[in-house]
Length: 229
Image (tube, rainbow, N blue to C red):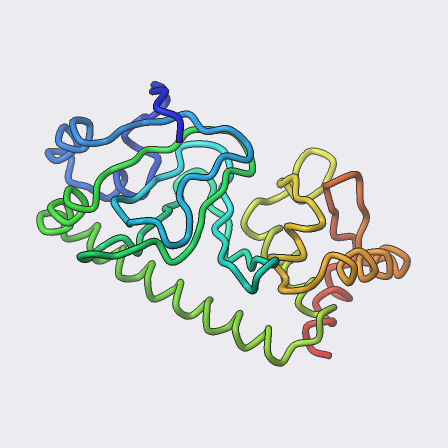
């Protein structure tokens, strides 16, 4: 991890700052470290000692887990306002996932000890964090069910729909995230070869369009229909 400090934390955008009591923000300022991060940089690795939590100020980070010896499953993506390493709460823990930067930006880091102190005096933050955990658990259960029962084309369609919902569209109408086919495969729980073939079929059928690493949904109704097959 780089130790280069940057100055683009506005104490207003991230999950922590938005929900903390205003009187607590000086404590946040004193205990956080704001870091610039570059594309491809590993923030923490699965199995590392869990020492703290990261809040994304800018850029995009993927959260991923080993699937087997040479594969990974992308659990989710975090953009501005997102959290990373939240499972570091507790004692003698390790990170159960890894986090890698997809788009350069900046993150804020705070220690687990300071986060626990913060939660004890910021009731709204604690409540919203509980809701976050509940939503993450529901999404994880849904994804595990899809991996077990949904055909691969449906999983790819679901991945594209989720990405569009999270990142929106750029000026050309493409999903606003530059994603390799391998990362899309890891997010959908499929192989690279299968994703490449399925995307070609979807494009031929008029469901999507592509431009390099960018993908555009051109027929959302038909794409949604793949989820029911």
